[in-house]
Image 1: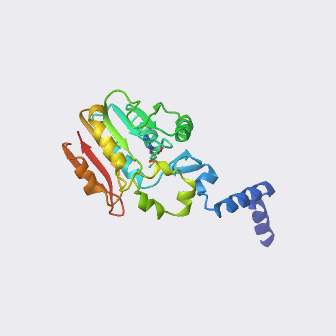
Image 2: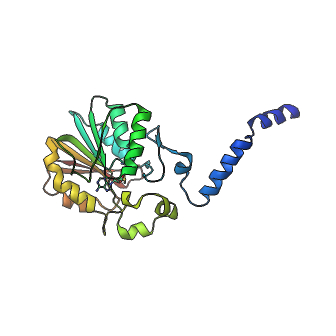
Length: 237
Ligand SMILES: C[S@@+](CC[C@H](N)C(=O)[O-])C[C@H]1O[C@@H](n2cnc3c(N)ncnc32)[C@H](O)[C@@H]1O
């Protein structure tokens, strides 16, 4: 019996190469490098996405945004602004293959990861390098975005793991965290179909500000995440 256990132990013990890899990852993790960057992938909505330096690691709270968008009916064309790893757009296309997806970002590094993930998941979607709407043509039934929304003051309080390693331009949005909502809302109407809607992920204290910013839109609805915090806003054209 003892001997059998020893054999099982030996069979499962990592070999020299794997031990060296584990040691290397542990050493880098101790320098606050996010585990997902070290492993080269992150999980989102039950699927694996390739990530690495230069792209934001998709967060579990963003799954709520995806869930809400997936419930939309009468949709043909969808635009995601600030796609990063492509996680949101890829899941939307996976779950609704009949939707036409365009995903944009202004970061060349992020777009490289999005491209790899599109290949990994074998789906078709159009990737565009664009500063918000500058290179976007046409109208969409849904515009979805998880834009940068951290105020410059709150950014300073984030853990070193995030500040040192994840791209600041994916997170910071001016003094109050509202810059991207303002810019998108200002220009979105000309890119929305008659009954088009906008979906944003928002910070837990931003619902009132965004409702005010969207005052010339027909309807604004706020949804909470599983922790009861305001997390998603739906805005009708
Ligand atoms: C919070 S991250 C979201 C990434 C991804 N959609 C997600 O949910 O994991 C915001 C993204 O917006 C992109 N971004 C920042 N400024 C932009 C701009 N002016 N135009 C387009 N994308 C921008 C960043 O590169 C980043 O990928």
